[in-house]
Image 1 (cartoon, chains in turn cyan, red):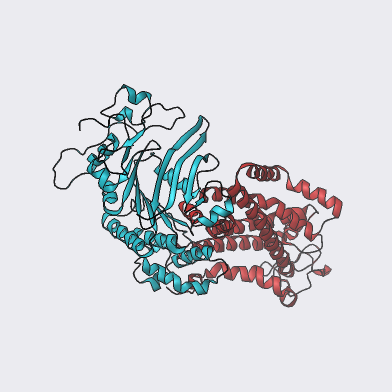
Image 2 (cartoon, helix red, strand yellow):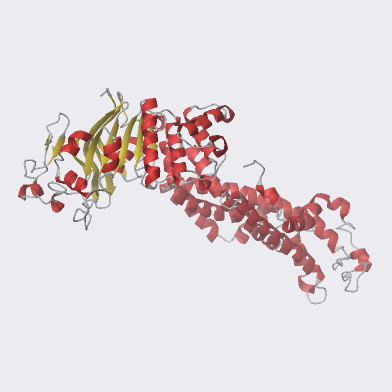
Length: 329
Length: 281
Protein backbone atom coordinates (compact mmCIF):
# COMPACT_ATOMS: atom_id res chain seq x y z
CA UNK A 1 0.00 0.00 0.00
CA UNK A 2 1.01 3.63 0.34
CA UNK A 3 3.93 4.93 2.37
CA UNK A 4 3.55 4.24 6.05
CA UNK A 5 2.04 6.92 8.27
CA UNK A 6 3.08 5.36 11.52
CA UNK A 7 6.07 3.15 11.87
CA UNK A 8 7.13 1.48 15.10
CA UNK A 9 10.69 0.18 15.15
CA UNK A 10 12.12 -2.16 17.78
CA UNK A 11 9.97 -0.66 20.49
CA UNK A 12 10.80 -1.82 23.98
CA UNK A 13 8.68 -0.63 26.90
CA UNK A 14 9.39 -1.63 30.47
CA UNK A 15 7.62 -1.30 33.78
CA UNK A 16 9.94 -0.56 36.70
CA UNK A 17 8.52 -2.81 39.39
CA UNK A 18 10.07 -3.54 42.74
CA UNK A 19 11.21 -6.87 41.33
CA UNK A 20 13.08 -5.13 38.52
CA UNK A 21 12.49 -3.76 35.05
CA UNK A 22 9.95 -5.94 33.31
CA UNK A 23 9.58 -5.67 29.55
CA UNK A 24 5.91 -5.49 28.58
CA UNK A 25 6.58 -4.59 24.97
CA UNK A 26 9.69 -6.28 23.63
CA UNK A 27 11.27 -5.52 20.27
CA UNK A 28 7.99 -4.73 18.56
CA UNK A 29 8.04 -3.39 15.00
CA UNK A 30 5.22 -2.73 12.60
CA UNK A 31 3.97 -0.04 10.27
CA UNK A 32 0.64 1.14 8.99
CA UNK A 33 -0.12 3.20 5.92
CA UNK A 34 -2.84 5.71 5.08
CA UNK A 35 -6.16 4.01 4.50
CA UNK A 36 -4.80 0.82 5.95
CA UNK A 37 -5.99 -1.13 9.00
CA UNK A 38 -3.59 -3.06 11.16
CA UNK A 39 -4.89 -5.58 13.67
CA UNK A 40 -2.96 -6.25 16.85
CA UNK A 41 -4.14 -9.56 18.24
CA UNK A 42 -3.38 -11.27 21.50
CA UNK A 43 -4.93 -12.34 24.77
CA UNK A 44 -4.98 -10.26 27.95
CA UNK A 45 -1.48 -9.45 29.09
CA UNK A 46 0.11 -9.94 25.71
CA UNK A 47 1.24 -6.32 25.57
CA UNK A 48 -1.14 -5.06 22.90
CA UNK A 49 -2.64 -2.27 25.01
CA UNK A 50 0.80 -1.36 26.34
CA UNK A 51 1.92 -0.91 22.74
CA UNK A 52 -0.94 1.54 22.20
CA UNK A 53 -0.17 3.40 25.43
CA UNK A 54 3.48 3.60 24.38
CA UNK A 55 2.55 5.21 21.07
CA UNK A 56 0.38 7.79 22.87
CA UNK A 57 2.96 8.02 25.67
CA UNK A 58 0.38 7.69 28.39
CA UNK A 59 2.05 4.78 30.14
CA UNK A 60 1.21 4.25 33.80
CA UNK A 61 3.30 6.72 35.77
CA UNK A 62 5.82 6.67 37.27
CA UNK A 63 6.63 3.03 36.54
CA UNK A 64 6.20 2.82 32.76
CA UNK A 65 8.78 4.05 30.28
CA UNK A 66 9.92 3.46 26.75
CA UNK A 67 13.38 1.98 27.00
CA UNK A 68 14.39 1.95 23.38
CA UNK A 69 13.09 1.99 19.85
CA UNK A 70 11.46 4.52 17.56
CA UNK A 71 7.89 5.56 16.90
CA UNK A 72 7.90 7.41 13.61
CA UNK A 73 4.85 9.45 12.73
CA UNK A 74 5.56 10.24 9.12
CA UNK A 75 9.16 11.43 9.63
CA UNK A 76 9.10 12.57 13.27
CA UNK A 77 10.19 10.32 16.07
CA UNK A 78 7.65 10.59 18.91
CA UNK A 79 10.00 9.03 21.43
CA UNK A 80 11.76 11.78 23.33
CA UNK A 81 9.37 14.59 22.44
CA UNK A 82 8.63 17.02 25.24
CA UNK A 83 5.31 16.85 27.08
CA UNK A 84 3.96 19.86 25.19
CA UNK A 85 4.99 18.46 21.83
CA UNK A 86 3.45 15.05 22.47
CA UNK A 87 0.25 16.70 23.74
CA UNK A 88 -0.10 18.30 20.32
CA UNK A 89 0.24 14.90 18.66
CA UNK A 90 -2.54 13.41 20.78
CA UNK A 91 -5.94 14.02 19.25
CA UNK A 92 -4.56 15.99 16.30
CA UNK A 93 -2.25 13.40 14.76
CA UNK A 94 -3.28 10.24 16.56
CA UNK A 95 -6.79 9.71 17.93
CA UNK A 96 -7.74 6.95 20.30
CA UNK A 97 -10.91 5.04 21.10
CA UNK A 98 -10.92 3.23 24.41
CA UNK A 99 -12.53 -0.04 25.31
CA UNK A 100 -15.43 0.88 27.56
CA UNK A 101 -17.80 3.57 26.28
CA UNK A 102 -19.63 3.65 29.62
CA UNK A 103 -16.65 5.11 31.44
CA UNK A 104 -14.86 7.06 28.74
CA UNK A 105 -17.18 10.07 28.74
CA UNK A 106 -17.25 12.76 31.40
CA UNK A 107 -20.52 12.17 33.29
CA UNK A 108 -21.18 15.81 34.18
CA UNK A 109 -21.22 17.36 30.70
CA UNK A 110 -23.52 16.84 27.73
CA UNK A 111 -22.03 14.88 24.85
CA UNK A 112 -22.20 17.95 22.60
CA UNK A 113 -20.16 19.81 25.15
CA UNK A 114 -17.53 17.09 25.13
CA UNK A 115 -17.22 17.04 21.36
CA UNK A 116 -16.86 20.84 21.43
CA UNK A 117 -14.15 20.36 24.02
CA UNK A 118 -12.25 18.05 21.66
CA UNK A 119 -12.64 20.57 18.83
CA UNK A 120 -11.43 23.37 21.08
CA UNK A 121 -8.29 21.46 22.03
CA UNK A 122 -7.48 21.15 18.36
CA UNK A 123 -8.50 24.70 17.41
CA UNK A 124 -7.42 26.85 20.34
CA UNK A 125 -9.02 30.25 20.53
CA UNK A 126 -12.24 29.47 18.69
CA UNK A 127 -15.51 30.22 20.41
CA UNK A 128 -17.80 27.42 21.48
CA UNK A 129 -20.73 28.84 19.54
CA UNK A 130 -18.92 28.76 16.21
CA UNK A 131 -18.06 25.10 16.75
CA UNK A 132 -21.62 24.02 17.48
CA UNK A 133 -22.52 23.35 13.86
CA UNK A 134 -19.46 21.16 13.44
CA UNK A 135 -20.49 19.14 16.50
CA UNK A 136 -23.78 18.20 14.90
CA UNK A 137 -21.94 17.33 11.68
CA UNK A 138 -19.51 15.12 13.55
CA UNK A 139 -22.29 13.33 15.39
CA UNK A 140 -24.09 12.76 12.10
CA UNK A 141 -20.88 11.42 10.62
CA UNK A 142 -20.73 8.73 13.31
CA UNK A 143 -24.39 7.89 12.69
CA UNK A 144 -25.88 9.31 15.86
CA UNK A 145 -29.55 9.45 14.98
CA UNK A 146 -31.36 12.68 15.79
CA UNK A 147 -28.06 14.47 16.32
CA UNK A 148 -29.58 17.95 16.77
CA UNK A 149 -31.41 16.73 19.87
CA UNK A 150 -28.75 14.32 21.13
CA UNK A 151 -26.09 17.02 21.48
CA UNK A 152 -27.89 18.08 24.63
CA UNK A 153 -28.01 14.58 26.13
CA UNK A 154 -25.87 13.44 29.01
CA UNK A 155 -23.82 10.25 28.65
CA UNK A 156 -26.05 8.32 31.07
CA UNK A 157 -29.04 8.98 28.81
CA UNK A 158 -27.40 7.11 25.94
CA UNK A 159 -26.86 3.45 25.14
CA UNK A 160 -23.40 1.91 25.02
CA UNK A 161 -23.30 1.84 21.24
CA UNK A 162 -24.37 5.48 21.07
CA UNK A 163 -21.72 6.49 23.60
CA UNK A 164 -19.04 4.65 21.67
CA UNK A 165 -20.11 6.56 18.57
CA UNK A 166 -19.65 9.79 20.50
CA UNK A 167 -16.19 8.61 21.59
CA UNK A 168 -15.53 7.95 17.92
CA UNK A 169 -16.68 11.47 17.06
CA UNK A 170 -14.28 12.86 19.66
CA UNK A 171 -11.46 10.74 18.23
CA UNK A 172 -12.00 12.04 14.69
CA UNK A 173 -12.63 15.64 15.82
CA UNK A 174 -8.96 16.49 15.32
CA UNK A 175 -8.88 14.77 11.89
CA UNK A 176 -6.05 12.49 13.00
CA UNK A 177 -3.84 10.59 10.59
CA UNK A 178 -3.98 7.50 12.77
CA UNK A 179 -6.78 6.15 14.97
CA UNK A 180 -5.90 3.62 17.60
CA UNK A 181 -8.96 1.61 18.60
CA UNK A 182 -8.33 -0.44 21.74
CA UNK A 183 -10.99 -3.16 21.74
CA UNK A 184 -13.73 -0.62 20.96
CA UNK A 185 -16.43 -3.22 20.48
CA UNK A 186 -15.74 -5.48 23.44
CA UNK A 187 -18.32 -3.75 25.64
CA UNK A 188 -20.98 -3.61 22.91
CA UNK A 189 -23.44 -6.32 22.01
CA UNK A 190 -22.94 -8.26 18.83
CA UNK A 191 -25.36 -6.49 16.51
CA UNK A 192 -23.97 -3.11 17.53
CA UNK A 193 -20.41 -4.41 17.10
CA UNK A 194 -20.96 -5.00 13.43
CA UNK A 195 -22.50 -1.55 12.94
CA UNK A 196 -19.57 0.02 14.71
CA UNK A 197 -17.02 -1.80 12.61
CA UNK A 198 -18.81 -0.69 9.48
CA UNK A 199 -18.76 2.85 10.79
CA UNK A 200 -15.00 2.68 11.31
CA UNK A 201 -14.57 1.39 7.79
CA UNK A 202 -16.74 4.19 6.38
CA UNK A 203 -14.75 6.82 8.27
CA UNK A 204 -11.56 5.30 6.95
CA UNK A 205 -12.80 5.33 3.38
CA UNK A 206 -13.86 8.93 3.69
CA UNK A 207 -10.81 10.34 5.46
CA UNK A 208 -8.06 7.93 4.50
CA UNK A 209 -6.92 7.61 8.08
CA UNK A 210 -4.84 4.67 9.21
CA UNK A 211 -6.39 2.47 11.88
CA UNK A 212 -4.66 0.34 14.44
CA UNK A 213 -7.27 -2.08 15.74
CA UNK A 214 -6.46 -3.86 18.97
CA UNK A 215 -8.56 -6.94 19.65
CA UNK A 216 -8.58 -10.56 20.64
CA UNK A 217 -11.32 -11.37 18.15
CA UNK A 218 -9.88 -12.92 14.99
CA UNK A 219 -13.27 -12.74 13.31
CA UNK A 220 -13.10 -8.95 13.45
CA UNK A 221 -9.54 -8.98 12.15
CA UNK A 222 -10.56 -11.11 9.17
CA UNK A 223 -13.37 -8.70 8.37
CA UNK A 224 -11.81 -5.33 8.99
CA UNK A 225 -8.04 -5.48 8.80
CA UNK A 226 -5.59 -5.57 5.96
CA UNK A 227 -2.73 -6.96 7.98
CA UNK A 228 -2.11 -8.10 11.50
CA UNK A 229 0.49 -8.74 14.14
CA UNK A 230 -0.02 -11.44 16.73
CA UNK A 231 1.46 -10.62 20.12
CA UNK A 232 2.33 -12.98 22.92
CA UNK A 233 4.19 -12.14 26.11
CA UNK A 234 5.08 -8.67 24.84
CA UNK A 235 6.61 -9.93 21.59
CA UNK A 236 5.31 -10.18 18.07
CA UNK A 237 5.19 -13.89 17.31
CA UNK A 238 3.71 -13.63 13.84
CA UNK A 239 2.89 -10.90 11.37
CA UNK A 240 1.72 -10.57 7.82
CA UNK A 241 -1.28 -9.74 5.69
CA UNK A 242 -4.59 -11.16 6.80
CA UNK A 243 -4.63 -13.47 3.78
CA UNK A 244 -1.16 -14.82 4.52
CA UNK A 245 -1.69 -15.45 8.20
CA UNK A 246 -5.15 -16.96 7.86
CA UNK A 247 -4.07 -19.22 5.03
CA UNK A 248 -0.99 -20.59 6.74
CA UNK A 249 -0.74 -19.74 10.44
CA UNK A 250 2.92 -20.37 11.20
CA UNK A 251 3.22 -19.88 14.94
CA UNK A 252 1.54 -22.46 17.17
CA UNK A 253 -0.08 -19.62 19.12
CA UNK A 254 -1.75 -18.18 16.02
CA UNK A 255 -2.82 -21.64 15.08
CA UNK A 256 -4.35 -22.17 18.52
CA UNK A 257 -6.10 -18.78 18.39
CA UNK A 258 -7.66 -19.65 15.06
CA UNK A 259 -8.74 -23.01 16.40
CA UNK A 260 -10.42 -21.22 19.35
CA UNK A 261 -12.82 -19.38 17.09
CA UNK A 262 -16.06 -21.38 17.12
CA UNK A 263 -17.51 -22.15 13.74
CA UNK A 264 -21.20 -22.04 12.93
CA UNK A 265 -21.25 -25.08 10.69
CA UNK A 266 -19.38 -27.46 12.97
CA UNK A 267 -21.01 -29.02 15.98
CA UNK A 268 -18.59 -29.43 18.86
CA UNK A 269 -19.07 -30.61 22.44
CA UNK A 270 -16.40 -28.44 23.95
CA UNK A 271 -14.94 -25.25 22.59
CA UNK A 272 -11.22 -25.33 22.03
CA UNK A 273 -9.11 -23.51 24.60
CA UNK A 274 -5.38 -23.03 24.93
CA UNK A 275 -4.17 -24.84 28.05
CA UNK A 276 -2.30 -22.92 30.73
CA UNK A 277 -1.88 -19.25 31.55
CA UNK A 278 -0.22 -16.40 29.68
CA UNK A 279 3.29 -15.79 30.98
CA UNK A 280 3.64 -13.84 34.18
CA UNK A 281 5.64 -10.65 33.98
CA UNK A 282 9.17 -11.25 35.11
CA UNK A 283 12.52 -9.78 34.38
CA UNK A 284 14.31 -12.97 33.37
CA UNK A 285 12.60 -15.04 30.74
CA UNK A 286 14.39 -17.58 28.62
CA UNK A 287 13.49 -19.02 25.30
CA UNK A 288 10.11 -18.74 23.62
CA UNK A 289 7.40 -17.33 25.92
CA UNK A 290 4.84 -19.70 24.47
CA UNK A 291 6.91 -22.83 25.08
CA UNK A 292 5.15 -23.88 28.35
CA UNK A 293 1.79 -24.00 26.55
CA UNK A 294 3.00 -25.15 23.17
CA UNK A 295 2.11 -28.66 21.97
CA UNK A 296 5.21 -28.75 19.75
CA UNK A 297 7.69 -27.49 22.35
CA UNK A 298 11.16 -29.02 22.18
CA UNK A 299 14.29 -28.57 24.22
CA UNK A 300 15.55 -25.59 22.32
CA UNK A 301 12.25 -23.71 22.79
CA UNK A 302 12.84 -23.29 26.51
CA UNK A 303 16.48 -22.30 26.07
CA UNK A 304 16.75 -19.88 23.18
CA UNK A 305 14.60 -17.11 21.75
CA UNK A 306 13.49 -17.97 18.21
CA UNK A 307 14.34 -15.50 15.44
CA UNK A 308 11.92 -14.10 12.89
CA UNK A 309 11.76 -16.12 9.71
CA UNK A 310 9.58 -16.21 6.64
CA UNK A 311 6.17 -17.66 7.40
CA UNK A 312 4.68 -20.81 5.94
CA UNK A 313 2.49 -19.03 3.41
CA UNK A 314 5.54 -17.93 1.47
CA UNK A 315 4.12 -14.38 1.27
CA UNK A 316 6.52 -11.43 1.13
CA UNK A 317 5.48 -9.88 4.41
CA UNK A 318 4.68 -13.01 6.36
CA UNK A 319 7.02 -13.45 9.35
CA UNK A 320 6.92 -15.74 12.37
CA UNK A 321 9.19 -16.58 15.27
CA UNK A 322 9.17 -20.29 16.01
CA UNK A 323 11.72 -23.11 16.19
CA UNK A 324 9.23 -25.58 14.77
CA UNK A 325 8.12 -23.87 11.61
CA UNK A 326 8.79 -26.95 9.50
CA UNK A 327 6.52 -29.06 11.71
CA UNK A 328 3.84 -31.33 10.37
CA UNK A 329 0.51 -29.78 11.13
CA UNK B 1 -34.57 18.81 26.73
CA UNK B 2 -34.82 22.43 27.70
CA UNK B 3 -32.14 24.56 29.23
CA UNK B 4 -34.12 25.65 32.29
CA UNK B 5 -32.43 24.47 35.46
CA UNK B 6 -34.55 21.72 36.93
CA UNK B 7 -33.50 22.99 40.35
CA UNK B 8 -36.04 25.80 40.04
CA UNK B 9 -38.83 23.30 39.54
CA UNK B 10 -38.02 21.39 42.71
CA UNK B 11 -37.02 24.23 44.97
CA UNK B 12 -36.72 23.09 48.56
CA UNK B 13 -39.18 25.67 49.91
CA UNK B 14 -38.96 25.01 53.63
CA UNK B 15 -35.22 25.33 54.23
CA UNK B 16 -35.04 28.37 51.97
CA UNK B 17 -37.92 30.03 53.82
CA UNK B 18 -36.34 29.32 57.19
CA UNK B 19 -32.97 30.61 56.04
CA UNK B 20 -34.52 33.76 54.66
CA UNK B 21 -36.43 34.46 57.88
CA UNK B 22 -33.72 33.52 60.36
CA UNK B 23 -30.56 34.53 58.55
CA UNK B 24 -30.71 36.46 55.31
CA UNK B 25 -33.48 39.03 55.86
CA UNK B 26 -32.29 39.96 59.38
CA UNK B 27 -28.70 40.14 58.14
CA UNK B 28 -29.63 42.55 55.38
CA UNK B 29 -32.35 44.62 57.05
CA UNK B 30 -31.72 44.40 60.81
CA UNK B 31 -31.42 48.19 60.99
CA UNK B 32 -35.00 48.60 59.78
CA UNK B 33 -36.89 45.64 61.13
CA UNK B 34 -35.40 45.16 64.58
CA UNK B 35 -37.87 46.53 67.18
CA UNK B 36 -35.12 47.92 69.44
CA UNK B 37 -31.54 49.09 69.42
CA UNK B 38 -29.55 45.91 70.11
CA UNK B 39 -27.08 47.78 72.30
CA UNK B 40 -29.58 49.77 74.33
CA UNK B 41 -30.06 48.53 77.90
CA UNK B 42 -33.59 48.93 79.25
CA UNK B 43 -32.44 48.56 82.83
CA UNK B 44 -35.95 48.58 84.25
CA UNK B 45 -36.90 45.66 81.96
CA UNK B 46 -34.01 43.35 82.85
CA UNK B 47 -34.61 39.59 82.42
CA UNK B 48 -38.06 40.04 80.92
CA UNK B 49 -39.47 36.60 79.93
CA UNK B 50 -40.68 36.14 76.35
CA UNK B 51 -44.26 36.59 75.19
CA UNK B 52 -46.60 33.79 76.36
CA UNK B 53 -44.25 33.12 79.29
CA UNK B 54 -45.30 36.20 81.20
CA UNK B 55 -43.68 38.75 78.92
CA UNK B 56 -45.08 41.57 76.83
CA UNK B 57 -45.27 42.33 73.12
CA UNK B 58 -42.62 44.97 73.60
CA UNK B 59 -39.90 42.33 74.09
CA UNK B 60 -41.26 39.33 72.20
CA UNK B 61 -38.29 37.05 72.95
CA UNK B 62 -37.53 38.63 76.33
CA UNK B 63 -34.51 40.60 77.50
CA UNK B 64 -31.10 39.75 78.93
CA UNK B 65 -29.37 40.70 82.16
CA UNK B 66 -28.91 44.30 81.04
CA UNK B 67 -32.44 44.59 79.62
CA UNK B 68 -31.35 44.38 75.97
CA UNK B 69 -33.93 43.01 73.53
CA UNK B 70 -33.02 39.42 72.56
CA UNK B 71 -34.92 39.54 69.23
CA UNK B 72 -33.09 42.64 68.09
CA UNK B 73 -29.76 41.19 69.14
CA UNK B 74 -30.39 37.95 67.21
CA UNK B 75 -31.36 39.95 64.14
CA UNK B 76 -28.20 42.02 64.26
CA UNK B 77 -26.13 38.93 65.06
CA UNK B 78 -27.36 37.24 61.87
CA UNK B 79 -25.14 39.58 59.91
CA UNK B 80 -22.01 38.29 61.62
CA UNK B 81 -23.06 34.66 61.31
CA UNK B 82 -23.72 35.14 57.60
CA UNK B 83 -20.55 37.04 56.78
CA UNK B 84 -18.22 34.85 58.82
CA UNK B 85 -19.68 31.60 57.49
CA UNK B 86 -19.76 32.76 53.90
CA UNK B 87 -16.37 34.42 53.73
CA UNK B 88 -14.60 31.89 55.94
CA UNK B 89 -16.03 28.85 54.19
CA UNK B 90 -15.61 30.17 50.66
CA UNK B 91 -11.98 31.09 51.30
CA UNK B 92 -11.31 27.86 53.19
CA UNK B 93 -12.95 25.82 50.44
CA UNK B 94 -10.92 27.53 47.73
CA UNK B 95 -7.63 27.04 49.56
CA UNK B 96 -8.45 23.42 50.41
CA UNK B 97 -9.76 22.55 46.95
CA UNK B 98 -6.81 23.99 45.08
CA UNK B 99 -4.26 22.30 47.34
CA UNK B 100 -6.26 19.05 47.35
CA UNK B 101 -6.41 19.01 43.54
CA UNK B 102 -2.68 19.63 43.28
CA UNK B 103 -1.88 16.95 45.86
CA UNK B 104 -4.15 14.33 44.33
CA UNK B 105 -3.19 15.02 40.76
CA UNK B 106 0.55 15.42 41.10
CA UNK B 107 1.07 12.89 43.88
CA UNK B 108 4.61 12.19 44.97
CA UNK B 109 6.53 14.71 47.04
CA UNK B 110 4.05 17.57 46.56
CA UNK B 111 1.22 15.36 47.76
CA UNK B 112 3.17 14.20 50.81
CA UNK B 113 4.11 17.77 51.67
CA UNK B 114 0.57 19.18 51.41
CA UNK B 115 -1.01 16.32 53.31
CA UNK B 116 1.54 16.60 56.16
CA UNK B 117 0.62 20.27 56.48
CA UNK B 118 -3.04 19.18 56.69
CA UNK B 119 -2.12 16.69 59.40
CA UNK B 120 -0.33 19.44 61.29
CA UNK B 121 -3.32 21.79 61.13
CA UNK B 122 -5.52 18.99 62.46
CA UNK B 123 -3.08 18.26 65.26
CA UNK B 124 -2.66 21.89 66.28
CA UNK B 125 -5.37 23.10 68.65
CA UNK B 126 -7.08 25.93 66.80
CA UNK B 127 -8.12 27.62 70.03
CA UNK B 128 -4.49 27.84 71.07
CA UNK B 129 -3.58 29.32 67.72
CA UNK B 130 -6.37 31.86 68.02
CA UNK B 131 -5.21 32.75 71.54
CA UNK B 132 -1.67 33.29 70.30
CA UNK B 133 -2.80 35.40 67.36
CA UNK B 134 -5.22 37.38 69.53
CA UNK B 135 -2.41 38.08 71.97
CA UNK B 136 -0.42 39.63 69.14
CA UNK B 137 -3.09 41.49 67.20
CA UNK B 138 -6.03 41.71 69.56
CA UNK B 139 -9.40 40.07 68.91
CA UNK B 140 -10.94 41.10 65.64
CA UNK B 141 -13.30 40.10 62.87
CA UNK B 142 -10.41 39.28 60.49
CA UNK B 143 -8.83 37.06 63.10
CA UNK B 144 -11.99 34.96 63.36
CA UNK B 145 -12.09 34.48 59.60
CA UNK B 146 -8.41 33.55 59.55
CA UNK B 147 -8.98 30.92 62.22
CA UNK B 148 -12.03 29.59 60.35
CA UNK B 149 -9.96 29.15 57.17
CA UNK B 150 -7.20 27.50 59.13
CA UNK B 151 -9.58 25.03 60.76
CA UNK B 152 -11.64 24.01 57.72
CA UNK B 153 -9.31 24.02 54.69
CA UNK B 154 -7.85 20.67 55.68
CA UNK B 155 -11.25 18.95 55.43
CA UNK B 156 -11.62 20.19 51.88
CA UNK B 157 -8.03 19.32 50.95
CA UNK B 158 -8.40 15.75 52.23
CA UNK B 159 -11.73 15.10 50.56
CA UNK B 160 -10.76 16.70 47.26
CA UNK B 161 -7.44 14.85 47.18
CA UNK B 162 -9.15 11.51 47.81
CA UNK B 163 -11.65 12.07 45.01
CA UNK B 164 -8.97 13.37 42.66
CA UNK B 165 -6.93 10.21 43.22
CA UNK B 166 -9.93 8.15 42.10
CA UNK B 167 -10.93 10.39 39.22
CA UNK B 168 -7.48 10.73 37.68
CA UNK B 169 -7.47 6.98 37.03
CA UNK B 170 -10.91 7.00 35.40
CA UNK B 171 -11.25 6.18 31.73
CA UNK B 172 -12.68 9.53 30.73
CA UNK B 173 -9.61 11.27 32.09
CA UNK B 174 -7.41 8.86 30.13
CA UNK B 175 -9.55 9.56 27.08
CA UNK B 176 -9.16 13.31 27.59
CA UNK B 177 -5.41 12.87 27.81
CA UNK B 178 -5.19 10.87 24.59
CA UNK B 179 -7.38 13.54 22.98
CA UNK B 180 -4.64 16.03 23.78
CA UNK B 181 -6.03 17.79 26.87
CA UNK B 182 -3.44 19.51 29.06
CA UNK B 183 -3.15 18.89 32.80
CA UNK B 184 -4.80 22.23 33.60
CA UNK B 185 -7.69 21.43 31.28
CA UNK B 186 -8.11 17.96 32.78
CA UNK B 187 -8.21 19.43 36.28
CA UNK B 188 -10.61 22.20 35.29
CA UNK B 189 -12.98 20.32 33.00
CA UNK B 190 -12.79 16.69 34.02
CA UNK B 191 -11.86 16.47 37.68
CA UNK B 192 -13.20 19.64 39.32
CA UNK B 193 -16.75 19.39 37.85
CA UNK B 194 -16.96 15.84 39.16
CA UNK B 195 -16.12 16.82 42.73
CA UNK B 196 -17.93 20.14 42.92
CA UNK B 197 -20.97 18.50 44.50
CA UNK B 198 -18.81 17.01 47.25
CA UNK B 199 -17.33 20.44 47.87
CA UNK B 200 -20.78 22.05 48.08
CA UNK B 201 -22.10 19.44 50.50
CA UNK B 202 -18.94 19.64 52.59
CA UNK B 203 -19.22 23.44 52.65
CA UNK B 204 -22.76 23.36 53.95
CA UNK B 205 -21.81 20.83 56.61
CA UNK B 206 -19.01 23.16 57.70
CA UNK B 207 -21.44 25.99 58.46
CA UNK B 208 -22.39 24.30 61.71
CA UNK B 209 -18.73 23.88 62.60
CA UNK B 210 -17.98 27.51 61.78
CA UNK B 211 -20.86 28.95 63.79
CA UNK B 212 -19.90 26.85 66.79
CA UNK B 213 -16.24 27.79 66.33
CA UNK B 214 -17.14 31.46 66.20
CA UNK B 215 -19.21 31.01 69.36
CA UNK B 216 -16.32 29.29 71.11
CA UNK B 217 -13.85 32.00 70.18
CA UNK B 218 -16.27 34.74 71.19
CA UNK B 219 -17.00 32.98 74.45
CA UNK B 220 -13.29 32.94 75.26
CA UNK B 221 -13.04 36.62 74.42
CA UNK B 222 -10.76 36.06 71.43
CA UNK B 223 -13.45 36.08 68.79
CA UNK B 224 -15.76 38.86 67.85
CA UNK B 225 -15.26 41.60 70.41
CA UNK B 226 -18.18 42.51 72.69
CA UNK B 227 -20.64 44.15 72.62
CA UNK B 228 -21.26 42.99 69.02
CA UNK B 229 -24.19 40.58 69.33
CA UNK B 230 -22.68 37.54 67.60
CA UNK B 231 -24.87 34.47 68.09
CA UNK B 232 -22.14 32.59 69.92
CA UNK B 233 -21.76 35.47 72.35
CA UNK B 234 -25.52 35.59 72.91
CA UNK B 235 -25.58 31.90 73.84
CA UNK B 236 -22.59 32.42 76.09
CA UNK B 237 -24.30 35.39 77.79
CA UNK B 238 -27.10 33.25 79.14
CA UNK B 239 -24.90 30.46 80.36
CA UNK B 240 -25.04 31.31 84.06
CA UNK B 241 -28.76 32.05 84.03
CA UNK B 242 -29.81 29.01 82.01
CA UNK B 243 -32.07 27.69 84.79
CA UNK B 244 -33.86 30.89 85.76
CA UNK B 245 -33.79 32.83 82.48
CA UNK B 246 -33.52 30.13 79.83
CA UNK B 247 -34.61 32.38 76.97
CA UNK B 248 -31.34 34.30 76.86
CA UNK B 249 -29.51 31.25 75.50
CA UNK B 250 -32.47 29.40 74.05
CA UNK B 251 -33.46 31.78 71.25
CA UNK B 252 -29.96 32.44 69.87
CA UNK B 253 -29.36 28.69 70.14
CA UNK B 254 -32.54 28.05 68.17
CA UNK B 255 -31.38 30.49 65.51
CA UNK B 256 -28.12 28.53 65.19
CA UNK B 257 -30.01 25.23 65.07
CA UNK B 258 -32.47 26.36 62.40
CA UNK B 259 -29.71 27.87 60.29
CA UNK B 260 -27.47 24.81 60.40
CA UNK B 261 -30.39 22.46 59.77
CA UNK B 262 -31.76 24.42 56.81
CA UNK B 263 -28.35 24.84 55.25
CA UNK B 264 -27.73 21.10 55.47
CA UNK B 265 -31.08 20.36 53.85
CA UNK B 266 -30.32 22.89 51.17
CA UNK B 267 -26.95 21.24 50.65
CA UNK B 268 -28.66 17.92 49.98
CA UNK B 269 -30.94 19.44 47.36
CA UNK B 270 -28.02 21.23 45.81
CA UNK B 271 -26.03 18.01 45.57
CA UNK B 272 -28.91 16.24 43.83
CA UNK B 273 -29.20 19.10 41.43
CA UNK B 274 -25.49 19.12 40.67
CA UNK B 275 -25.45 15.39 39.90
CA UNK B 276 -26.82 14.94 36.37
CA UNK B 277 -27.77 11.35 37.17
CA UNK B 278 -30.17 12.47 39.89
CA UNK B 279 -31.48 15.39 37.89
CA UNK B 280 -34.97 14.54 36.79
CA UNK B 281 -35.34 14.29 33.05
